[in-house]
Image (cartoon, rainbow, N blue to C red; front, side, top):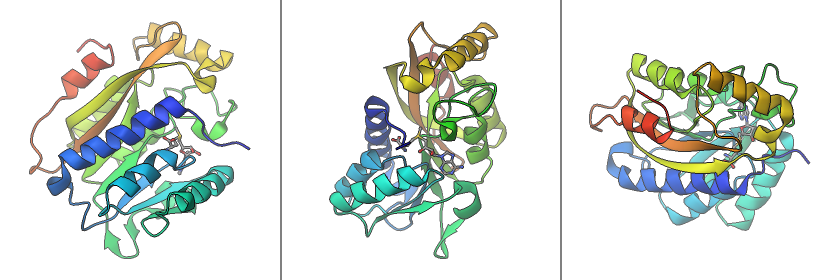
Length: 238
Ligand SMILES: C[S@@+](CC[C@H](N)C(=O)[O-])C[C@H]1O[C@@H](n2cnc3c(N)ncnc32)[C@H](O)[C@@H]1O
């Protein structure tokens, strides 16, 4: 079975999404409108968040049939199938509106593995040559609020400058150091990451990197901009 499997990273993503949704509950308005998710994986992290936040509804999409199958089983096991749905397919083909309801908030631990091409351990995790293709696509999709994982080796400076050009501010974030998992450790990927870091397009240690889960907004009702702090947390100079 080919399904994204990284317990530490998924837990970091789920915990951070939960913290940010709670801290900005009123401004994000998720109790009255659904949230969409790019990339369900096995759904375990966000299923727990949905279980813990009774007003939350999430519509999720994944291009991996194995992931969707595991996700549906995990969601059913946690008893949240009525509020956490999963569709097999490309997020960008489907998520503009859900059942006619406007959506203002998207969440994602997007594919961010940088590599010269898609021929890697799990091709669905390919994030393009610099790793941030899907993150940039998500930012360009027009949601007012985006909660997304940002990896220190996937050209975060370009990600945040593009976000700023699109009118987004970094409201807040949670950052965590992670050891390389099987996808980053693959020799072809590890070598590519080394090259990106040498070119000044990110940060990684010998066997570690940083991932921040950040809330970006274009909503003037949510103040603040912590973009510089986020880059510092990812070990980058600003
Ligand atoms: C890093 S994993 C995250 C999974 C899960 N959210 C987690 O954190 O445990 C990214 C997921 O995005 C999925 N994916 C990749 N491209 C996609 C697309 N265009 N639309 C929907 N899902 C996609 C992959 O199959 C993979 O399951």
